[in-house]
Image 1: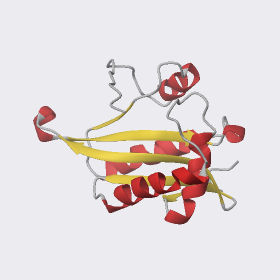
Image 2 (image 1 turned 90 degrees about the horizontal axis):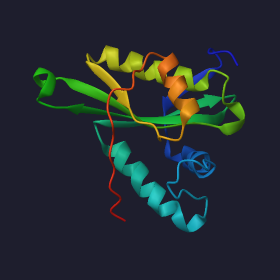
Image 3 (image 1 turned 90 degrees about the vertical axis):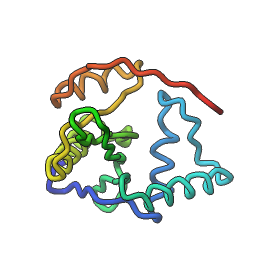
Image 4 (image 1 turned 135 degrees about the vertical axis):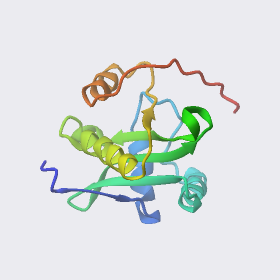
Amino acid sequence: MSSQDLLIREARESDLLALIALFAADAVGGHGDTTDPSAYDDYLRAFRTMEASSDQTLYVAELAGEVVGTFQTMITTSLTGRGSSAMIIEAVQTRGDLRGQGIGAAMINFCIGEAKSRGVRLVQLTSNAVRKDAHRFYERLGFKPSHLGFKMALK
């Protein structure tokens, strides 16, 4: 794959089935994603929430007209760091049969470029503790493990 062949763009509602399939194929994530048609409205509602937000953007990576990856960015501003902003990268996913071909690196580098162009001071992400390959991938791209995260499921 040539990076020139890869198109990174904002997701459209017409991408939703491909995005759902990407997440449903992830056996490690444990998010309960499914291609069951009865769940479609849940995904559509979430997509429309992201689409309406000025602080969130859902992207796809497209190769030869097919969605082969996705990620979401969120910009947060806090009082720490003298009121600076951070970009959070979330839900990074590359189609399983295409991993190791530079798609993930292209998506993350796109995020870093976007963050720099917006004057953001920090780019951060979390990764499932069992995804050791992903951790090595992020470290190769220059990320440093720095914090311990905690979650509490409410449903």
